[in-house]
Image (cartoon, rainbow, N blue to C red; front, top):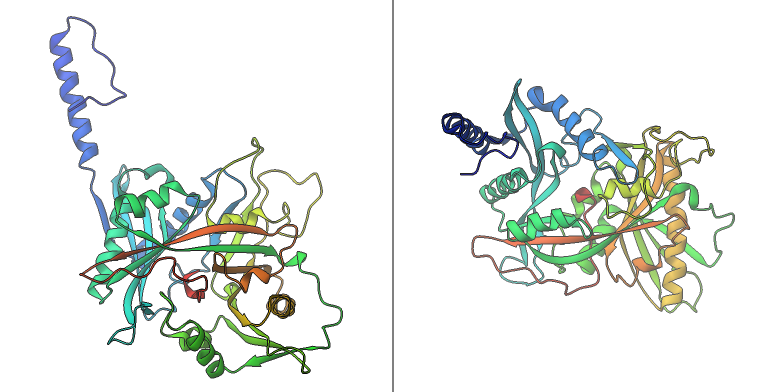
Length: 420
């Protein structure tokens, strides 16, 4: 066993001191190696304050671009509570003042389509790992792996035959954890388009040849199940998604008259402001360049400097913070028809989405889209000059003898807004 790297070198000839120092160094190394990492389920009374502190340290500690503080509005489970089966695991280590919470991972189990068909209706129970966080001071110590395995074990106990996770395509550490150490395989590539709401211009006069109608939940569910129900990872409980409180509705757009060839497009909206809020902190000056960021940081990176997403003068101090803000997610974007017609219909729905987002309230500052890379319909969503694209990778791990899900087979996906 090698000595502790911070240990002083003994002077030449002092064999007794050298031996004692080596013993001390060995004891230090053994103590560090045996530092127990306990992973357990979240306890509100014990963990609430520590988790809020951890979330802040993980976002602000990156030092790249704008930093984000997540306000969970007093409920760390807010982003998974809509799943009937959900859990939050926390990791803690012994410190000088007792145990310190150093990591967290949220998870859920739901039924999703396999894309394979079969006697079970082509669905399977799958676990999802959401919101994995490890304190910047405790990374590269295997804590992330322990949290991942704990959620996997919990999901397996609840019947999950696959586990799904997502990673920023530019985040080598995250991909290394899931693919390199935990045995996940890429299943799909998606992108996230973020556009400040201030950049979406209101439509003075809607096109007279476009008719937009809101679908009833039952109609929207039938439409999505017919269009996406057989695609890998499409949730089986689309009805529950559309009936959830954050859902703002589903709209379909068509042309009036006889020359439209039956072209149509649809879009659903999800109000994240009802679940959590974000706060932006301006970065210190740094050289140009830099790597990828987590999703929430990218939401702020396309925005002006504080005041939040509202613009500021040249004198805005670095390190200033903005007020809390939320965003509306557009999902379920689909349609049929020739490209120019579908493009016009999607743009009409995007203008409607901006109106709905503004009605949410002053805290809503952005419109966000998540879609499969190469999606032939979602590509028609307008992109303002400050829009930003983030590339994501969905990763899947099969367990218990389950067949691997098809990878990269389709360009269209129904993105479950509860996963966001």
